[in-house]
Amino acid sequence: MHKLSLSQFLLEASQKKEPVTTELSPLLMDIAQACKEIALSISRGALQGTMGSLNAQNVQGETQKQLDVICNDIFIDNTSRCGLVAGMVSEELADIYLPSQPSTATNKYLLLFDPLDGSSNVNVNISVGTIFSVLRCPADISQPQSHDFLQAGKHQLCAGYALYGTSTIFVLSTGHGVNGFTLDTETGEFYLTHPDMQIPADTQEFAINMSNYRFWSAPMQEYINECLQGETGSRHKDFSMRWVASMVAEIHRILYRGGIFMYPADSKATHGKLRLLYEANPMSFIVKQAGGASSTSFQDILDIMPTSIHQRIGVVMGSKNEVIKAVSYQNLSH
Ligand code: AHG
Ligand code: MN
Ligand code: MN
Image 1 (cartoon, rainbow, N blue to C red):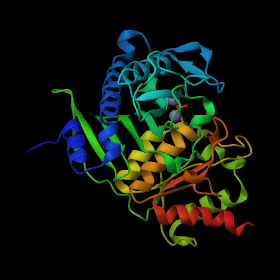
Image 2 (spheres, rainbow, N blue to C red; image 1 turned 30 degrees about the horizontal axis):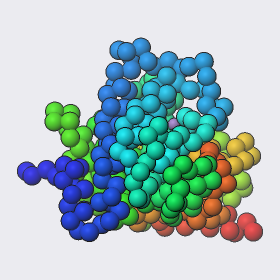
Image 3 (cartoon, protein in one colour; image 1 turned 60 degrees about the vertical axis):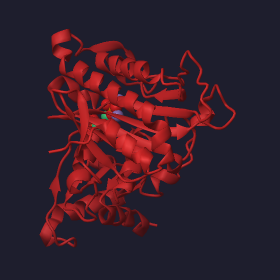
């Protein structure tokens, strides 16, 4: 069986005259390399004694794990040298990061990432991931500032994630569909194993942290109530529920077999929990490219004009018809 490696895939995309993929190829290979190193570092965490928490909080008041910081460093180290990145935003850094060697490329890019998503799962050997997004650096700017990163998600050039699960999978979209690559640990290469991923439009599976039920808005409670009523209720079908507590794992499952993933803003987290620029936006870009939909419950996530680099947002995404259905409860309340 002929297997197409990630670098061959990127070369073929360049030959098909996909300018964004062509230009971003060196950066994408560096990101893939970072993900390989993160996979190794996570898998060796207990052996290396790096599974603990640090006596430090990130800018969002969350206690950092040692691996949050290690994965952040690996990601930055690998992506600072290709000369394409003018600046970065990371969940683990309060401020933007500028590579020490300023980019001299004509077209420069901004890289936004969550180096270790689902880090509460890392100690208990449950899947975690890395999420990234690429924006264009405004022309004539060599040293970007925070406000240069505040672009609506629809302007993303590329988004992707790595899922560190039973195997390491790298999923990528440069605006021409979504493709998934599995790491062959024997050769150290990613190979195309999930071409042109498509999210089924309908589903009977939802993912939400049910323990937040009492904090949700009445329409969100009503939507879930009706899912729970199953065949005997107004939806006339039974639902199943999943909650991994790693967004990457949930979205990967949804890309594979459909589903709806929700982390709505509620009375406890009034702005939502997930971060717009390096969680909600890249995942929305991928979900949309795979035929799905994403919303805050009030507007398309990809249309939001960000106001700060670590902004949080409510999230409802996945199978298109189910997202439309969930959001419709919100509209009924007005
Ligand atoms: P992170 O580890 O990067 O902070 O993200 C964790 C996120 C997301 O991956 C997951 O869906 C959600 O937090 C889980 O939240 P709860 O622990 O509240 O269920
Ligand atoms: Mn995360
Ligand atoms: Mn994280």
